Length: 124
Image (cartoon, rainbow, N blue to C red; front, side):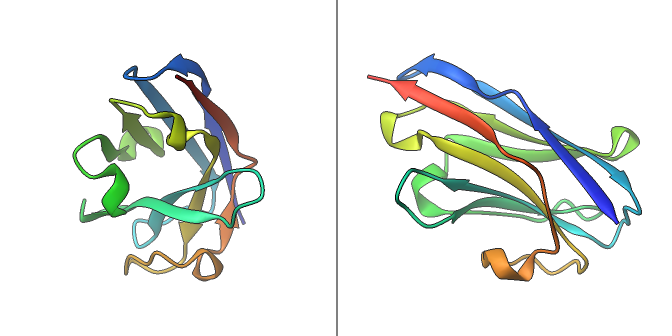
């Protein structure tokens, strides 16, 4: 089992920045892929970004490219999502997820472990 705990969410004005953290514990592996997803009220959970745990290969959804950066710090078993130039449409609950395979994917059902989520609210 792998446990994921997100932190760093909050309320920020449009144009501001936040950094989300996802601390992983348990049976983590360097072969895992890690992802960030978000879900706004009444919407489906959508892919935001992903990174391979060991290789550093990344992927982003188009709407966040150039504004968000995913990274990982292996020594701390932590994945980050740096969010800059935030927009009101970025408002959502953000979830961290882990996949027991190194290949990146944007599909939520292909991830095996999920955190509890952290709220990000961007005011206009």
